[in-house]
Amino acid sequence: MYVRMASSKSSLAIFLCLILAVLRNVVLEAEARAFFVFGDSLVDNGNNNYLATSARADAYPYGIDYPTHRATGRFSNGFNIPDLISQAIGEESTLPYLSPYLTGERLLVGANFASAGVGILNDTGVQFNNIIRIGLQMQYFQQYQERLSDIIGPEQTQALVTQSLTLITLGGNDFVNNYYLVPFSARSRQFALPDYVVYLISEYRKVLARLYELGLRRVLVTGTGPLGCVPAELAQRGRNGNCAPELQRAAALFNPQLQAMINSLNSEIGSNVFIGANIQQTNIDFISDPGRYGFVTSKIACCGQGPFNGIGLCTPLSNLCPNRDIYAFWDAFHPSERANRIIVRNILSGSTDYMSPMNLSTIMALDAATNV
Image 1 (cartoon, rainbow, N blue to C red):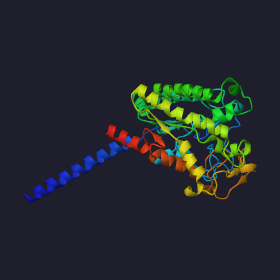
Image 2: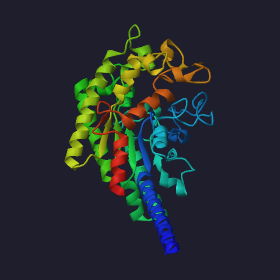
Image 3: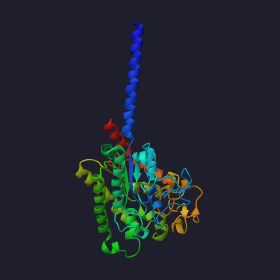
Image 4: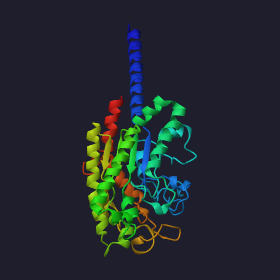
């Protein structure tokens, strides 16, 4: 009798362990998800390396703090925002879509379609020539789905896309590399600034609606940072080290209208597909009080030349700071890896001041619970 009971208890324990193991695998599978990235240089992982364009970050000192200590095409001293999101959700970094290494099982991780220099509008970044404009990025995403379908079948491809996470970052270049690119630019003659912002938002809505049509159901949408406060604008348009007022006005108009458009689109769909990430507020936090975040400066770029190291490109001949962790900006336009970590921390766990209607940790928990 004792032997039988012991055996029964042992079998029950093994059974419970098996059930727990199965449940753990289900949760892990629910949490594991493909990651797709669209947008500009803030999120480009190296697509422009494969293009004949001047908008490239494929030479030293870019990548100086990346694990390989080599330039990868990221506009950063190390990891960029998509890398850090991938790490946070327990996935490897997505490869650039144009990378020859993006084949086979690597397609299951997702892909990065972003291209430095692009904007919401097709005429943004014309000076960079050969870049992957947002329409083409979405065409490449369709092509990606066809390639993946050949490997795992159309039903599994659809499931992977539906359960994926997406990041899109657009808008900054439509001001810096279009409306304000030159005095009396074509767009500035066509639109007063408030009307231009309304036009940008209407065009961006079409982009987001198209992503939904292509099957994406969780899309992080970042606004612009405080455009007038980057070292390039401090050097060229700012006065006495103050942020350039016109570009600050542009960001102040654009970001609230972007969030209102996201809310409207979600309401129309009937689901929180699009999540607004207020990176302007995060940037303002460490720009206005750099010491609180461990920075010695939020005005001077680590790599560059001229006032605030904000003139021209970051090159091997540029001034280069010895400690990138104490600079909020890596080059004239882009945050340092450490600043990117602060941005991603707020994407993950920030309050509604930073993420609307919810942060990424909440999304992951909700989706895991739904998929179990």
